[in-house]
Structure formats: structure tokens, C-alpha cells
Length: 307
Image (tube, rainbow, N blue to C red; front, side, top):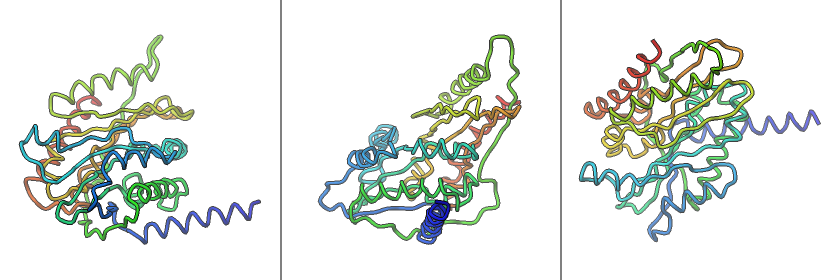
């Protein structure tokens, strides 16, 4: 039995290496011909949900939003969606609370009118490992990437991964993190204090243009609480998506707040916009300004609330 288990684990490690070798880029774009127009964002969502492992929670038609807000759209069709594999997230939480930084995962679904192709951009195994600092050889992270790969092939039959010429190097932090101590009082739990914090946090988001498409409360025996947010700001994704439609691999972005039962402090974190800039090769100064402004707004709110 032990020998069989070693073979099984070894196969997963080989798979992890092959997934990385297939695309060492942090973002992957899966593409298929759609000249007959039979594939769309809804059919892709249906394929994800039918997998039994990965579920799409939100799938928004961004062109509808962009046309109303800005009077112009950049692509024939453009959707942003969020999804997760809850079973694997809970397993990864055993050792790596950083999985919350990419819970939920996000994707963009977009069509190239000229080439008549439909594309889905997501984080690759390398990208998932890079943000979370979970080893790329971790069996559960490999299984997560494999489950995404499997459903992409079901959603886009005869699809293939495109060659992505991204990845500017950066020496700046890839995550932004905070710690806060909640002081317990009579008849008040850590969860109660966290909810008070979240209520104050949410009240600060809307006035500066942020929306929360979805939030999650994950139950795990090792934590007093573990919550994540999916957050988006249209004034950031709209200019970025013009030349970088695959930005949906990072937008909406995830923010995690958690407290381990064996620790005094609660932790808050989210992926820094340096991931956007480096992985998408963003060089336009106005676009960089828009995403850094978005990052600084969230950072400023959290700095004030954690003082």
C-alpha cells in the first residue's frame, strides 16, 4: 500500500512539473475557434458547474456595464467570473492560509471578433504558487490546477493554450498584508469582532468605487474565522482590459481575513497590483496609475482600520 501511495504522489509531482513546463507563465490563456458562435460565457459556466469540482459563483457581462458607464467597449464579448474548488481550498487551508489570497479564483472570458476565437484566462499553477507561496510541488495545489485544466478542456472542446509573452520582472512585494488583534470582551466572540471589522471595511469600499460581487465564510477547525472577499473596481479593470483582456485572471481580486486558533493576531491580505503590472506586461503610464490607485485605496483603508 505504501508503495502504491508513493507512486500516486510521484505521478502528481510529475504532473505538477509538466503543468509548469507547459506554461511557466503565471497567467494562462485557453483558446478555441468559435466561428460558429456556439460557445459563450453561459455555456462555459455550465461546463464548470457540471464538473462537480469547480463552481462559478458570479459571471458578469462586463460589456453591458462598460457601455453604460463609459459609452464604449473594447471587445466583442467580455465577461469576468469567479470560481473555486471548495474541497481543495479546505485541504490547503490545513497548512496554507495563504490560499485565501486566490479564493475565489477569477477568470476573463472574451472573444476576438477578427479571429473568431473565444478565450479564457486564468492563473496557471505557477501563478497560483507565486501569489500564495505554496510550493509548486504541493499535491493539493497541483490537483487544483489539474481540475481547472480539465474543466477548461470541457468548456472549450478542441481548445489549446496560447503562447503568452508576459512577465516583466519586479522586485516589489506581490502581496499586501496586515495583522490586527481583536480583544475579547464578555459575551463577544472573535467571529463577532471580525464581523464588526468587516462591516466597517465594507462601509469604506462603496464610496471610493469598489464593489464586492461575492464574499465567503469558510468553516475550518483550525481557525476562529476565515473569510474572503471578491473585490472589483471598474475604473481599474476597464482601462486595463483594453489591451490586456486576460487581466481577468486577477480581477476581481481576492482579499482574505483569518485568525488561527493557536495565534493571537488576525491576518488580512490581498495580491498586490504588481502582479497585474508584471504578469500582464503593462507599460502604459495611465493604466499603471489606475491600478496603483486602486491598490493604494484598499491599502489605505486597511491601514486606517488596523492602526
